[in-house]
Length: 438
Image 1 (cartoon, rainbow, N blue to C red):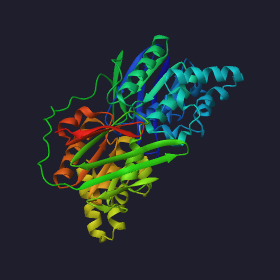
Image 2 (image 1 turned 90 degrees about the vertical axis):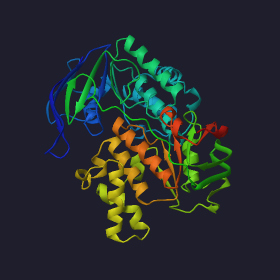
Image 3 (image 1 turned 120 degrees about the vertical axis):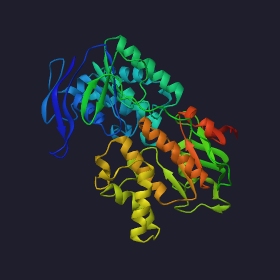
């Protein structure tokens, strides 16, 4: 059993991120941990795995207080924070090798884990070339290869397409049936848990998330002329892997980009925004070649675009680079922060002290503050709580209503389909379907 007794943890020695928490997770039990962004869920997860030690109180796993990583498999919110090897097979083998297992046993566990996660074809791929969803599966395979007694899953399916989520749900269910205890941190748990906990301001209590006011239906944006973001005959190759194969699309209004994990969506996002030069093809915005800053890009992982010392400086960076006077740049940053629901109490915090959901909102605010002519948002709702998802939806509608085109990559299309003007499906680097929707 995982036993947490009156545990506290503070990063700065003054404010407890985890505040006098006590909880249990039994063998074979499935527990869901809910809560708003910034409530302390990921920090608690790291305590359970031994990645962090409590400032006070205790964490015991089957009576032990040391070597918890052997007993508790932990899948982090961002898989890149967990991947240590260059090649997929080496990554999955890393844990078993560190357990001191014989080579034959290590290889057998690697084969078993790759097969369970449906990623045998990725065995020899470079981990750095994989999509976020593929990286999540690689990390899960590496954790399963260690055969832990407990699993802690921190938004472990946030970057996966629906069929792959169903596969992971089955894998976790089978592990639970074998007696593995599971704590799942998610705004939308994979399956009905045996028990639900909620975390708020560092405290944990029994029961579901706090009730929220009923959500009013989203209203499509008022139709008007928007910018046109066009990609023509785009090809991109990583080594021998063709990520994009003669892709063409014209994004106007709100365009959804759908497709399976590893289908080329993130590569296309980088090409359309000028971050990655294609091996062939062109990208234009309203008929002109795209230049740096013309198209705003919200990365799949918000940490990739956060680098300033404070939240407000990070949001204001774009306007400053474009030569906007300081007072105006700060005003634009505050406006963007308000649009994303970022309170003034976070302005002077380091963006790297924030939760994953908070970092995502700060990164989005930094993109919006520069007011580019078009936007590409790569899985912008991954890891966001319900209020933040609603705020993002309203923001996207406002941007389109103001004349910008938005290309939105998502594995959760249902909340966006009623609002989209077009849908494009990308599979294996090729456009399989494209057309008007609303």
